[in-house]
Image 1: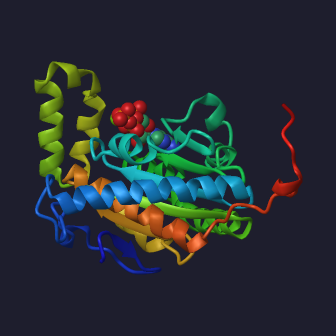
Image 2: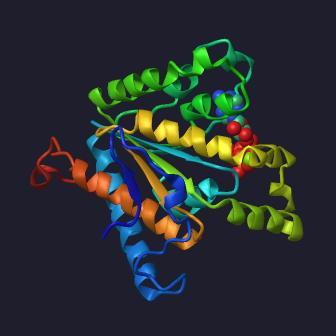
Length: 270
Ligand code: ATP
Ligand code: MG
């Protein structure tokens, strides 16, 4: 069953036509079928990730992008958190520091791509360099316009060298973001998450949506596709992300390596 929306290469996505409230065939948060599927997928994901790690041949890079409060951290906690620490990394990209600004924009991303055997999750990514940079006008159009092609070439290179790339956009509605920001103000133990800077980004919501639409149209490829996950419902968001990752790894079909010793001939000394 189709849970999330995969962006076909060159296709135009009308984000406004995708309902962030989607929940597919499920009734809601407490639907036992949803709970069962998530548990099954998380279990399977753990097994596949261990195989990937044991192989030490190929790698997976998962890019997570979203507007503020859309749930990148929630996905990392619920879907990535249960995985074995061996072979799994999370890298968060903030506004670039002086050292990063002294290099080309892909430098810091490339430095953190996964080693063979690993799965790395980018919490924000090189896509910020065609999103926030564009929307806030941090670089002239002549500069960021060229980056779509660089990014496609960069990701193609990663793929050719053994790293599968998948990109996930968590799509929440502007109303849902308002609700979540208000919640951060209302609840004392969520207040620390409130950032006035998020309001500035929120004001530019439509510009961000237009920038995302161009990102999808220009950089979703057969080898490194974009997925739009409908994310107003947190349980559904997690379910979709887990499914995308399980399907990707099933397709890669990692296998435990043959071991060099014959277990029958090895005697463990007392
Ligand atoms: P959280 O708020 O949940 O901690 P976050 O990813 O929003 O997570 P912040 O430290 O709040 O983390 O924000 C990081 C900020 O850095 C974002 O506003 C993002 O747009 C900005 N940023 C990331 N990469 C770049 C870049 N290349 N150029 C400019 N700004 C960037
Ligand atoms: Mg933030």
